[in-house]
Image 1 (cartoon, rainbow, N blue to C red):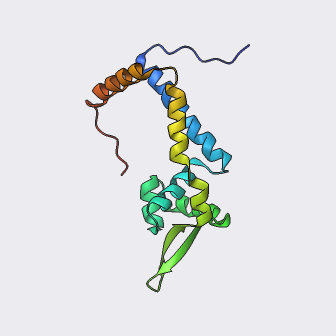
Image 2 (tube, rainbow, N blue to C red; image 1 turned 180 degrees about the vertical axis):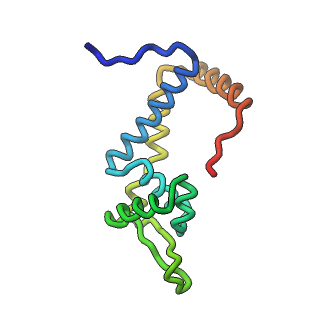
Image 3 (cartoon, one colour; image 1 turned 60 degrees about the horizontal axis):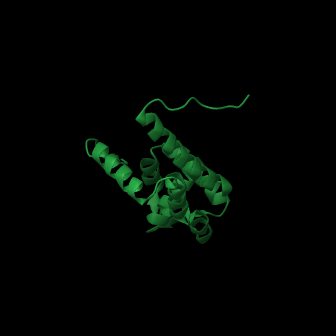
Length: 148
């Protein structure tokens, strides 16, 4: 007996299905690199904004400093990040992606663009434009998502 989910019954169930496909593409990409989603988020964050403190990374990733500490130990053990003291203060360490870490995470954005293309492949140019216009109309009434 095939394991199939029931067909979506509402427009937003279709949107959730699309979101699931995007999330799965991201998870597959990170899994191929033997990273978890939180590890890939932190590593990408360090490539974008080098020299973050552990507490800054905890805020960005919406987790606890203890969880970030454990996550960083794993990345450090693989040679993907390094912690450096700055200004002679041994208590304050800044975290940086290594060249190996930056190389490992490189290409994520391109992979997500490719996933979007795969998802939208059944639509021609006019249908994509109409779809985007409808989504823009809906999201114009919603608060913008933010990362605290």
